[in-house]
Length: 101
Image 1 (cartoon, rainbow, N blue to C red):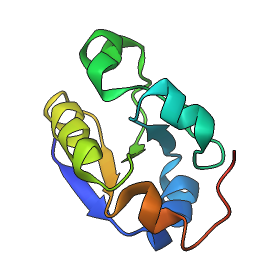
Image 2: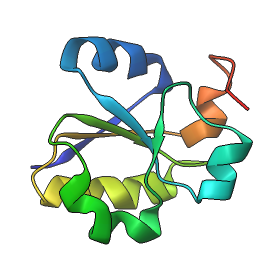
Image 3: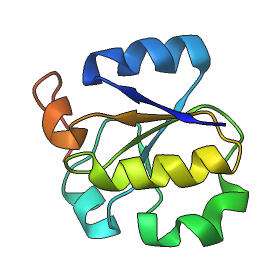
Image 4: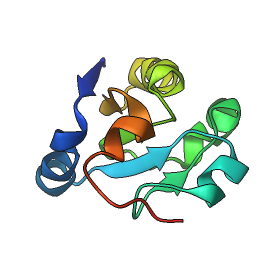
């Protein structure tokens, strides 16, 4: 399966219509500092070892600016997941919503 690039404006629609989980692929300390409301954290470096525990549901991935989540989306997409990577990452998302601290 492949992955899809989405704009931050599409997150809620995909989350509601597809039942997607939102996953932050940054390091735990970055996640603790700020993250999208309701997002889980699976650091990119741990993706391979944790892949078997990631639910087989549609996934929305993000990082700071979009490059690491793109790499993660490629890996998960190749493993058969339905994946959406947020263009511009958390920085683009901040323009739309208030981010948890």
